[in-house]
Image (tube, rainbow, N blue to C red; front, side, top):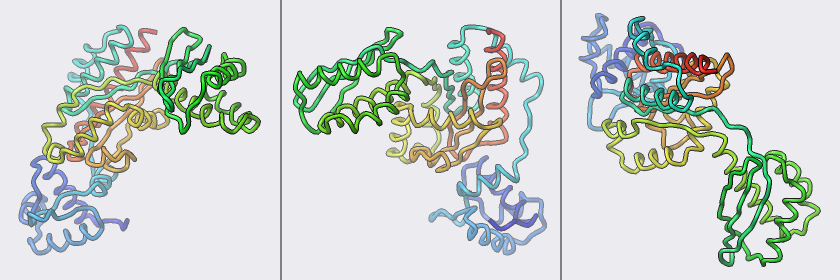
Length: 342
């Protein structure tokens, strides 16, 4: 992107701040008035045209004003935003809500607090559990091409999954497959099973390959669900924002994403490898239901080791200067409380 001169930066910053505050497209007269620059509306319109060509703002069909694009918000957050830290008195008040307690209750508190302070959806990914190891596989034929897979872990947990195969398997074949898996892979985690099975599948009868592969895929999914879980609060807050609620099909996709969990967990897990607050605007998340949203995340720690992440999901039209410090301080307070517990 071409560098913006100071005048263009001030006008873009003013436009985005006005749009965040009012939710209405911003016209050139309003920009002349609020920018503090001594510019004619005609000059402002010329700058707006340049910003539009650069993909930083766009014109809704029904209005002469402009609104920011996801690219405009990204430039704003990276180059123009001034984040005000929370006042000490406010931080002390929040600290009172993170007294040492059971980890799960602290995680629930953090999720509720994020939602309450921002009026968006607050989410906390819990620390990952230890990888499950397998004690036993069992197969039960349900219908011609539907098989119940029963996974028993070394911890005694039982996971059930339905497998849909291209062909039916006889009771003898299912029994032979279970025996093979139990004999070769008992006591291992699914990463190791997948690696070893890949080497051994070439030596198996090809008609059993599909069943074995489906078993490992389903087991890996079960292991990932077991390893990560999250608490989300305030999803219904998102219904209050016309930016999101005006598109019901997208809203349905968004709530489906909350239920499915895996995609969101993977997104928030990126924070575990990052330093401090991360911001995903629109399609930067890689998850289509979040195209109209921004996700602000931060990792949290126990005794200096990053164990999970938390964040806020809201419309792209959010007060980033206010939300970023809330996410940052909540991560710090949760880290302190969990470390005190340990």
